[in-house]
Length: 122
Image (cartoon, rainbow, N blue to C red):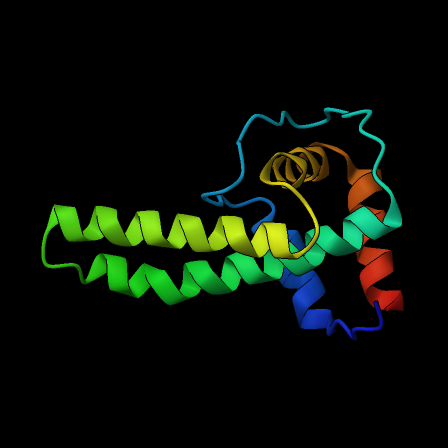
């Protein structure tokens, strides 16, 4: 994978990991060392997936806020969730793998540093 990741993306990924993401389970505790073994390839797949998920969330957030009814908002949320799932899968991961890495990154500063370094080096 020879993509160039701008510094702004690295900062955004770092920041967004601390914010709620619809696909991410929010179970991490500060200082939690996950013990999850994550390869560099998996971290890069995660970065690609997270960028796609965030793009989809950005695309749908205004549409959901402007929905004419609760039913329309729920339909848009389901559509966005399906698109996020597909984006994660197209990055080469399962949603469970994505969630596991996201939770691990929230609680493991060393893993976060590895991700940031990989993105700067790519």
